[in-house]
Length: 328
Ligand code: BDP
Image 1: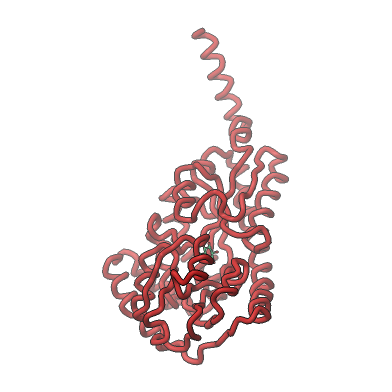
Image 2: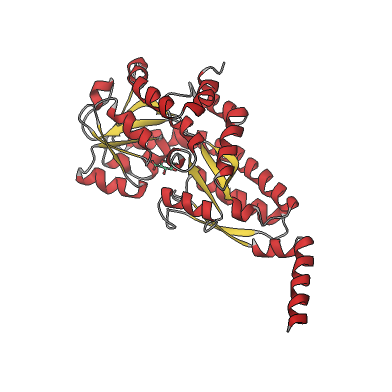
């Protein structure tokens, strides 16, 4: 018995050194996705896992579970940290509770434009946030596009912060978004993405906020006809792998996974630009009244208390905030 046991252990160790066992263990990765199958994030995730499978000669394969069937986003973030889910695309919005650094990109109007967000996330800002995620068990493989989020509701077009007053607005689960709505005297309701359609329809909430592809793909536009281009949040999304899964890979496999993650982000960003334009056309054809906001300065000014409270309770993140705010 003892001899057999030793033999088995040695064989396993030898196989591990050759990268065979780790590859075999990682073979069937489970990917969490909140979106419908026909969505830029979904296509990006599919291209990622297909490339990983091809480049590892099938040592690592996987399946993407679309439509949030594996649970809500806040839960899935914890599952990835624990290694119960292997990969996912997360908005950095609901990641704030687990990874403090990610809160910086959830501050309203912190990026001045989407191109600026890409540039900074592909540089030192993204590196700092990625480090914070790694410390919490999440490996960032690529920054995905999510455009800018704007308000929509079933009551009235929004042109000034005063138009938000008294509205019940669904937000993603993060206290920063509650504070953002309260700064305009609205009533914020944190709620899972999957529950928003029904809540809009039954009047549990008057509105929500999201980018055009999410407003369209969820059919929220059918039940909240006013879409006002406030573009108050530019929050990147991340293709991530659980560190528990990552640590089982050989260095060669890790290189393949990292390169496939980056490539899938480039692809997703291209798809995003097309989908954003298409989504706006679809919602307009469906009867949505889209309005631009002539002057966004009053919204930005209304956010001062949000920044003040954030910096007061997170003084260690001031450098990162300033790095983004002072970016040329
Ligand atoms: C979408 C994001 C998704 C979020 C969702 C939300 O892609 O990750 O869960 O917004 O509002 O734009 O919950």
